Each structure stands twice: as structure tokens, then as C-alpha cells.
Length: 236
Image (cartoon, rainbow, N blue to C red; front, side, top):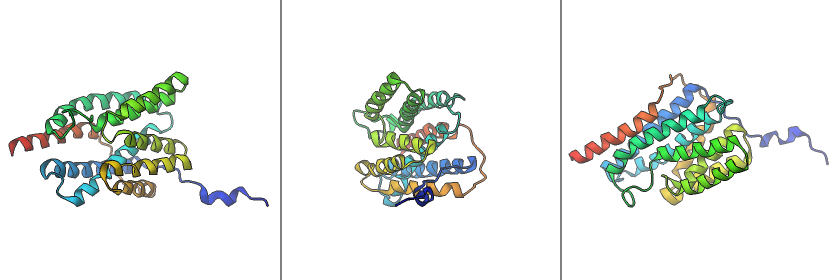
């Protein structure tokens, strides 16, 4: 029996091609969900279940935005990785002060905030992009060690890596790994609400949202909103 290549088109996966405005809109959505989640966590001790559930969507959206931007054509050649890594390190360090001040961490410092998680993921992607046995080995070691230190641990890093791999070349392995790593957040979140990020992401290419890019918005906003919450808690 002979099969034509057309017979398998149903199995072809969509390439994610989003406008800059739509990517910005996803970032704003993630920022809003993160803010509500943190207000609920630090001011209301997680008492509002609906906000807690909605907040689970934020991190996978942030991971996707990072992965999508680093997977853009010629991102490596344009020095995008270096710029992103410098910003994540700088603002991750700045955010550490209010992040530690808000409390609720093991040993007073663990895990490190989400900026460091994104930084570790971006560094692993960079090493893989460079290629070579030594760099790939370093990437694996960084994934293992870094995943033990950052928020959302190895599932979060895997989400970033799988999304990056899928954005570069859509394939079933990357998609299934992406889905499985988000589902694995159940071990942390105790629910599967984070999976709602996927329909948002895969519907996004069909929507064009005319929002201008706000440079460094996320980097500045993250430590700033933690500082505001810290001040509010100390004032209560």
C-alpha cells in the first residue's frame, strides 16, 4: 500500500508566528496574572482560590515569551542572548532584596526568583546554540544544578527549553515535552491550571493586537511590584 505525503498533513504542527503586538499582549497578560497572584499570596495568604488558579498561567506565558524571542531567526548572531542574560542577571539581583524581604522561603533564600530561572534557561539555550561537546555538556550540568536553585525548578526550565525547540522547528517531541513539563507543575501547584497557557499561545497567531513594545517593562516591573508589596506588608 502506498501513501502520499499529503496523507500526513493532518499531523503537521502549526508554526508559531506572532506579531510583536501580540507578543507584547501576552506579556501584559502574564504581568497582570502574576501581580494578582502575588497580591493574593502576600497580602491575603493565598485565600482567594480563583486568583491562585489563574496565577498558575503566568509563568508558562513568561517562559514562552522568552523562548519565542530567543528562537527568532538570527537572534544568536544579533547578540540577543547576551543582552537578555545581562538584564535577567541585573534585575534578578535587584529583585532579590524585596523577594527575600517578603519571606516564605526555605533557609531564608531558596529558591531564587523567576528572573534567575529565566536566566538559567536562556544560558542553557545559548550553550546549545553554540554547540560542541563541551558546551552541550555544560548546558546539561547547568540545567541539573540550576534547576535545583530556581523557582519552579526543572519543570520550568523544561518548559522554556521545549517552547524554544518548538518555536525553532515545530515537532511532536517538542510539543509533547512542552505539554508534559507544564503538566508536571502539578507537583508544585497541585492543579493543572497552568495548561491553560497552551491554548492562549496557540490561538495567539490568529490574533493581531496593536500594542507598542515597552522596552524593559518586565525587567523593571518585577522588582518594583515586589518592593511595593514588601512595603505594604511592613506597613500593615
